[in-house]
Amino acid sequence: MAPLDTEEQNPFGSTEAFHAAFAELYPRLVGYARRYGATFAEDIAQEAFVILMQRQEPVEHPTAFLYGTVRTLALTERRPMKNQNLSLEAVMEPAGHGGGAFDEVLNAEVRSQMKLLSPTFREALWLFVVEGLSIREIADILSIPEATVKTRIHRAKAQLKEHLNPDTPPGGMHVLV
Image (tube, rainbow, N blue to C red; front, side, top):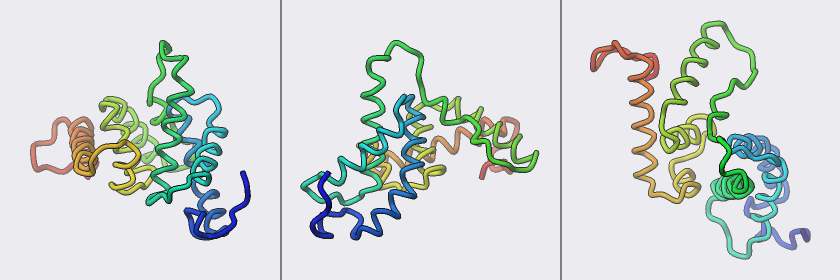
């Protein structure tokens, strides 16, 4: 890839901003690719940055573009393995970071209940809550309207509340608020 001639070619504005964005997003994009079962997640994340930087047309939301590209590349890598039972179940695997015993139990329960959500609800909720992406960015990644993203997140949260608190009467207190 040729070096950037001008800052207009850099979707992040400056070389320093690009390096900061790469440092922040690269590990998250690698994890996102792994959740899709990608074997070469690091290569896919790097390739997404290369594709972004080589684009002739400007990208309005570079972060959303990167996530969408990683998703497409990871699914493309998986295509030859389509008969294997690969799914987004890895999304809910423990991250291995420390925490209190109560937090560990609650996190395990939330992860197990998230596995019960449909993949469309689970993916929207994951991108919003864990990845911290905006509704607009998620809509760009999934190629769906923003209203659909909001609906999926709302329904995913409602289903999680119901699964985590099955005996709570309507309007009662929930673990997940």
